[in-house]
View (cartoon, rainbow, N blue to C red):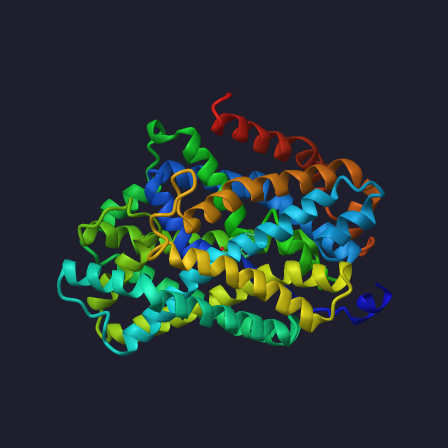
Length: 450
Ligand code: TRP
């Protein structure tokens, strides 16, 4: 253990730490998952609920994970163990580690699609003229052997980066990548104004129709808030364990939440006007974004280049997210199981490859294999996002609110008294009461008890 701590790296700059954290948060969750979840859950009402959850549950929980991570400088299980003598909390650590593998499994499949779409745009394959051709092309890209190969290639990239350690490459890449991606999204957003379906799309996204709110919409919005902010598994905790001692945790949490939410809303402004302009349905599900985007690129001058650049950046943004997910299990294997970083990376890669193969095959050979009516891909997504993340978040909230000493929280939030942090009282109140109760009530509601 002693050695592991000495070896622990620290992000070089404050900006680097923020960029890396934002790099973890911003990814397919914003561009792919948010629009499709908003689409199947009725648009505006979903957006409002999602925003409320980010503000009232997401930001306090980000602070809680940061406090545990930077305070203990440990992996997720180690953090619980260092802060409490009882072993009951271990379950939350284990839940985080197992679920991180489930999430990578389906995430890698979608990231594989982005790589395929990137290559397909370079070679002109995305320039479809008819609706049918587009659908056909999409099916070819996302099912069968191609998709499996690209999923594996993506994972290969992911674990190669992890071999080299998190701080250097990722920090540098995130510093450049995130601003660039943001600019590109703003450009596409401006382009949306010219689409014939602009107002229909905007109305769909921003005009809440509260009659559409059901328990599944509420649970979906909660799951999306967790997913998008990388919360509930100890991912942000693990990253915070690499923060320097002079990294204002509260500010980092607020910045991360703000930027992440802005990217999701930008994605919505790009996707929904296009959905209505090209006569598609917002309820297409996980394939929505991949069916809609080629339409947008096709009507742009130099569309092929835009498309290539977009999918390339999305691929890289996905990488910065999966790297953060894998770091959860890798730091656990290193610090709790005494493995070298190399074997820890191999072990994590091994489980991720198996999970990802199952998910990649759910659109082809395994499409008829269903558990509770869901294929592996949808099952892993549902179980992790809507169940494991909120439970993990509830555990962390209760733990920091009730078990961790207030003095400890204060020291972390003020960098040991270096400055004042006004919101400590309210944060602890939220972590003790509001967050756990809200999550609990949403659960009761979703299983029909409330
Ligand atoms: N937040 C990332 C995204 O939006 C995905 C992600 C990274 C994640 N780390 C996580 C999701 C930990 C849940 C838990 O794409």
